[in-house]
Amino acid sequence: MTKRHLASTLIALSLVAACGDDDDDDGGDGSSRAGTGGAAMDGDGAGTGGAGADGAGTGGAGSGLAGSTGAGTGGAGTGGIGDGDGMNGERMIEVVATEFMFEPDTITASPGDTLIITLRNDGSDDHNIEFELPDDDYEIDEDVPPGASAELTVPVPDLTGDYVFYCPIAGHRQLGMEGTLTVE
Image 1 (cartoon, one colour):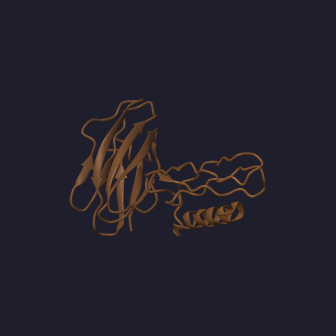
Image 2: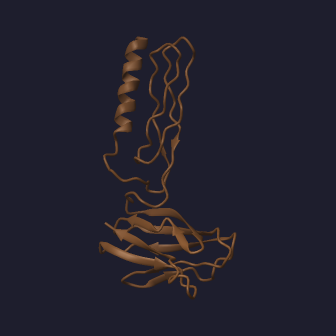
């Protein structure tokens, strides 16, 4: 196989991998996906990594030998915090609590997903998180002190719509510590 044919094949594979997700979401599904490397034909052998397969991942820089037609190796893609399509499985989402807000304050999920929420308290007061869902309310058992983190498993309802989450500590919700879980 000639170097030019090999380079053409690698470019085609890179384009297919980079175009694998036609969603317009701006986040990921919280998972990591591998990027695909491109091929260099300019003689310096530097390939560039393709986009991660979930649309939110970014490929790393490729490498090759100088003076050759080198194939780049893509880096690992990283999922965003929150938004993106789930695949009816577990998704890990980090929510950061400060005075008096959550980041992100909007989470998008698919019906039937299971969210593993890690609440990281970057504030100076204790915080918590509670989801009001049709079948039940889900809250971390103990308030999370400053500098600490805790996990909460939240089963996403099968019904589409918007559901609220908030900090259940007295007065925090009224000060703006509330967000939306959008199921679509």
